[in-house]
Image (cartoon, rainbow, N blue to C red):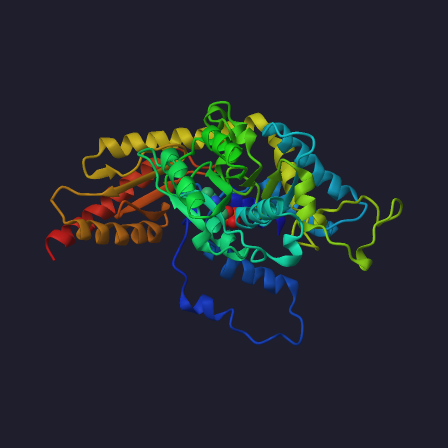
Length: 467
Ligand SMILES: *Cc1c(COP(=O)(O)O)cnc(C)c1O
């Protein structure tokens, strides 16, 4: 099995990135509950023929959809060790928790956070954003908000983020009980950053109307175009307005590992909390999200809850308090820190930073190639590792025809098995969106994307002008 997966990683280029899944394969997973066991070798065979060929393909160098990491064999083997140990790192006296604390120490160092900072592995940035909103709530209203809820009292709290922020930010406001309407989406400037004047104006309008601003969420790498908000300016506004300053740095925050990108994240070191994923630019296998909180005491105050069966001691297995379960909503938790520790320790921060910078250089190369082709049009500035463009062809097509053509084109690119971008809307224009995250991706994949887009776009363009 180990050999299968090592071969898989080695021979990725010979496979399609993704392929349409036959109904017969879907049907194979419609069986009744097995009363008797099946031989492992048979199940393994089923894995090889029915599961492995039909995953989404984010390990493949031609994968450019959404923002997904490619993982490494080192991470894979570490995951196997973690599963073998079957550690539950919710708490108690065990070195797996020291490994998680080692990662905390590294992250404090990377983001220049103080000794008092704390942090926690979670599934991903979606949950990390929710945790940040909850800590911001408890800090603003006091711990009694945990008992009384946010509706208690007459405060009408509001939060602020860029209109380009990820959907999980608004979802966090929903799940935390504020409702999505309490989050003010602030329009972006020409560089797709949160417009600071509009933020200041929105805060003043809200305060005049009796609202109480409590949270500002900056983006370090927006999901559509990879824009980084002016984090220093946001930190200043948050400080002046007595707001929690959270940064959604899902993939962008680890740009701190690259000397070329780190200066653009200036101000992130002043955040109250940062959410990010090791499973994106960090190349750690899924899932490995993280929340880093400047004031660890606030994180503890938000989540710790005494329970008799979780009684702490100073010796024995129930020592080592506070436990990770005091810092977030999970009690039982897997050992995500191990694959992250192996990945960072094996490659080193410098190498990981080079990989991150390389994906940005590939995006610049792709941008140049798009600009050199008259049949292609660049739709957004290329800030980091994301390129948004579309096929326009040689004959004049209407706005809606262009949107229809590119919608179909993205599907055909995915079905080609050669490259797999995803899509987004940039000012009502349907865009082919290529996000370069994977360490295996090279210029060859950029050339493949351009060539396949021109080929398939040409076919669709002819069909559109001669229906
Ligand atoms: C991916 C992403 C998220 C969500 O992270 P998950 O790990 O998928 O939960 C949030 N914000 C941004 C900017 C992202 O790119």
